[in-house]
Image (cartoon, rainbow, N blue to C red; front, side):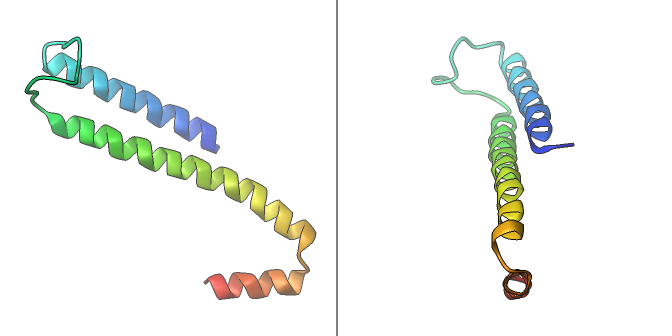
Length: 86
């Protein structure tokens, strides 16, 4: 599964959780005002969205960085760099 597929699946899960939150709170028209139950559901949605965006951007960055390093950097320097990162 690639990065965009993971992002799409988790985004759909988040959308489902927001719908569940709304249903549990009587389908409010706005989420800006009012006392709501089950606010932890929205906290979970926020954490999932941030984590999936982080995963997506990290994966895309690595998809670009690794081929670039393999082309542009001499293998000895590349291995030394990897050892220093570990």
